[in-house]
Image 1: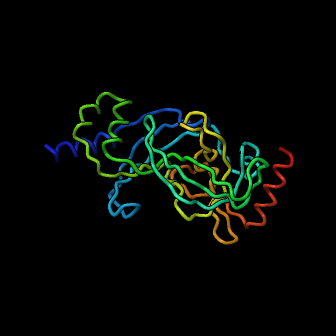
Image 2: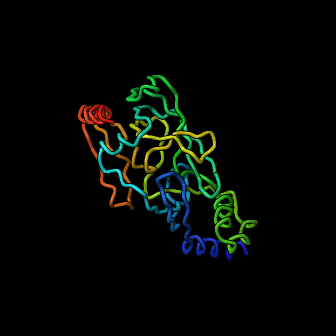
Image 3: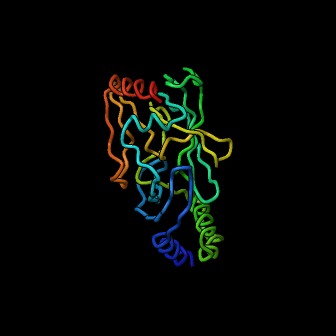
Length: 227
């Protein structure tokens, strides 16, 4: 019976699709896809990928700067995961090392939330059952085995990463945390003097952005002057 359930569970996730609004500018059309267990946050964790249709693609520093409520550089102190409605989120505490926003100063610790992260098989099946009654029968058989949900192949923040974030306040999540613009579109990783947008594997319309640290600083400063 357990093997039969697992087979049905996998088939169900592979063929399921949902559509919902997560943030102000993200229209999700998620088709959940399963990959084989891989080495990741836990030793063996199953990955579930979701796709998205974005109301706006941010393919320049100028566009990101224009729409961002805050722009900061910082270091990720710690992360945690939670489920809300039908999604899994990652909450990160980020210590500001440089601020381009008047209301944020160096040393501030800000809370950011991103789509994706670690949850359990049981929580995921419960989320599916909220969208389609056909999954309700599987909830009691699901386990607490961890799984990782990933949006468009773009990973969430990890401790000790140095990041550049173009963010806005969430209007739908508890405590109204900051969220990167366009999910991962407003998130960049800092590596020495290089700053690169977080990689994604699915959204080809969202182009890579890579800059020298001094160049991107000039672009941001120029963009916020005319904002």
